[in-house]
Structures are given as structure tokens and as C-alpha cells.
Image 1 (spheres, rainbow, N blue to C red):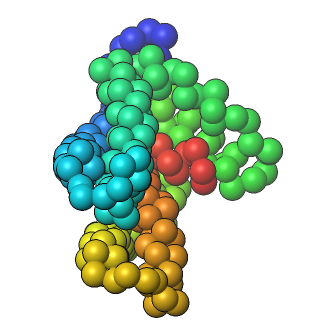
Image 2: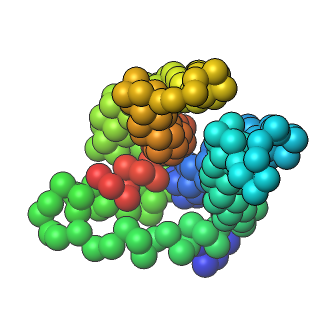
Length: 225
């Protein structure tokens, strides 16, 4: 069907549309997050370049913080843009990408659940009917039962941790500007600030992946059923 380029088969169109949406969602989501990180990166680099009253050849604490966040946000932005470009390519040329994804399905062992599911999908595609087989519908429904709540939870936690990260480091900059010496409380704050940054990035990736799978569950169901 892929080689023929025909789009008259409703079953094939459903599979191809889900594959296209799967990549389109990630391209859109990735672009939104990349735009937010570009704003954050620009803000950090501007604050980093501001003149500070400090000894020559030394960076005050605030300058180090903005340099670190500017560097991290720039690197993550470049990574997201790479992901966006790769997924956008699949959206613009879905049949080529779909053809390359078919070998990734592999050949499941006979008698397993995955083998039965694949056979049901193959029979559906050959029949040319629009209605999905009951087995695939159940598999998609079971995936969405946990994938959608996970996407909501991860997205909510990402927002919470992003706000927490900003508050922690803003407070650390404020405290350092006033304190002449640092105690256990201040070092504990820095430790917390360092830990929440990778957690926030991890939650961002989890929110991206689970939201993508919630919008286009058929592709993920066939790949990871």
C-alpha cells in the first residue's frame, strides 16, 4: 500500500493519519517549548551581560546563575529544534516516514498478544474497511486510560517545577546579595536549586512524550503493545 502511494484504503488512511498526527503534535509542542526557552535564554544572557560591581576577572553569584541558565536553556533549545525539524520532515512527507517505521514493528513471536494484534491490523488493512478491529480499539482504549492522565499529571508537574525553579534561584540571588557569609540553610537552598533543574527538564520531556501519545495512540500502541 505504501509503495503504491494509493490513499483509497480507509484502514491505511487511518494508520497513516495517526502516524502523521503523532509527529505533528511533537513538532507543535516542541516549537512551543523551544519558543519559551528562547525567551528564557534571551533574558538570562541579557542579565548576564549587565555590568556588575565586582572585582576584576571575577563573576558575582548572580552572573554565574544567569550564565548557567543561559547555557542550559540554549543547549536544550537547540536539541528541541532538532527534534522539531526531524518530526516536521515526517509531517511533510508522511508516507516515506511511515514506510521506514514499518520495519520497527518487528515480527512478534507467534501466539503472543502482539502477534494476534498485528494479525488483526493486517487483516483490517487488507479488508479496506473504515472501522478499526475490536482488538485494536481495546488496546488503544487501554493505553489512553493511563496515557492521558499521565500526560495531564506530567504537564501540571512541569509547570509547578518550572515555577519552583524560578522561585528558588530568585531567592538565592536575593539572599546572596545581602549575606556576607553562607550557612547550612543557603547551601541547602543551592542543592535544592541544582536538583530541581534536571527534574524540570525531565518533566518537560515526559509531558511532550505523553501528550504526543495521547493525541496519536495507534502508532504507540502498535510499537509498544
